[in-house]
Length: 432
Image (spheres, rainbow, N blue to C red):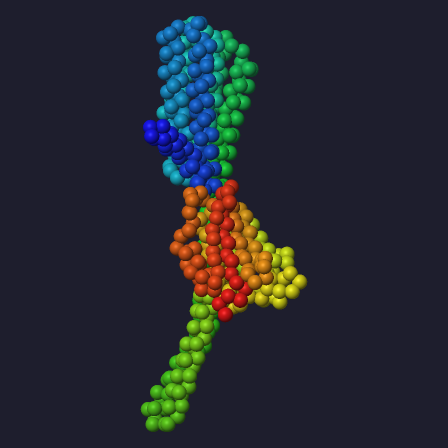
């Protein structure tokens, strides 16, 4: 019993340890890219601390203890300020906060102060001449966060200040100019370029994500406008005729003409006709047609930047023949209730792809493996939530109810690699 409890505790501990990784994998592609880029920038700050520790260990026999402690305090302070400014500058560059002017000033003063401390220790002999290597670290790591906090021209001018101070300090203690100058310029240029490109990439990813959401909203807005235009075309003319005939009936009634009754009878007929036409429009909007929904799915997904592929049973591609004869391997003729139910599957599946996935590809396949049943399969990549049963929300429950009315079934699955698969199977003549 104790062994079993221990195994259970170990399993629970492993799950807790892997929880951050699970959250990372379950996040959207944009969030994962943000996290990766941020950790890469923060790793450069950690690199400065690692190099400083390596240098201190390499000089433990040639430098005094108090000199090493002084360098450790100066370098450690510079590393902490570097990390703080890197985070604040990245937030400023991506537009989520203002420019960290105070922190930038403190970091600049701290860098110059660290250079002065190390240069003074080397000049007085408390540190060996190899201490000038630490003086190269400071301006190199200084250039990275500064490149995010300022414009390119401003960052170049500011980064040149500690670089010039470091080179002047190394020359003052008798070190050759050219090697240190090349090291500072190359290192500062590399870190400045890397930080700037990383921040620019994050902004591009954010803009692409915002554009994708805007395209999806525009597609929905366009559909609403279409519905509004249909209602206007159907009711606008009839309502104008009703208004005119009503006014005419009023005038005829005031004159005592029996023709007023005929006009009001015509108004009644037009009103009933308008009511029927309006119901037809609303019914067409509420009842999905498979062919129209397949075309709409391709248009909406393509507008959202998703590669949409639609395959028919006979390999005809996007032109799925849902009203064919069933001969020659073509898709069999489907009853109207089945076409409507499958159209709802396509509509709801497309909505799920737009709302709950960061998909790059989506495949819709319609085929009739046995001739008497038709299968509609929708599969996309980039599913955000990898928990078992995720995605089985009220929308899919409603689809199951609709398919059950025509004798069909709906299943959802996650085959792996962040993909999501929706499968609807319905009798070809269901609902008749």
